[in-house]
Image (cartoon, rainbow, N blue to C red; front, side):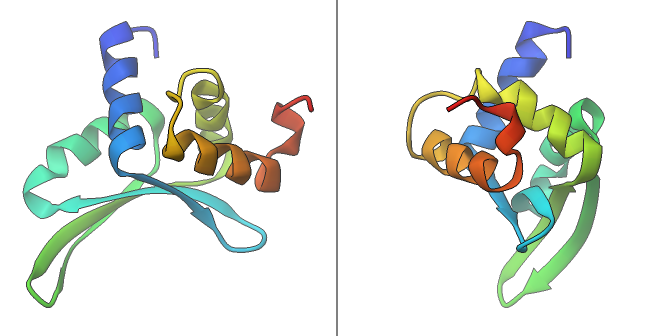
Length: 107
């Protein structure tokens, strides 16, 4: 990403709505939003890659899910490493990096 606005926008969505997750072998980054906000998920897909799933209905919820995995996720993790703002989401991110991408940090 070369555009500072797009970078800040993506970081803001991830800081506010992102979930750094994975099973014991495969890391993932996901964002779940109401289906009416699919344009925001499309922005993530265009800027970082990944796939959008849904829309899904669960009870009274109607949502879509964006998931990033693989090499695109590794590149995004490098991008977030020095840019994700301090706070609980950064703490979660750093724990996730230590679990899946130890080589990205020098401790």
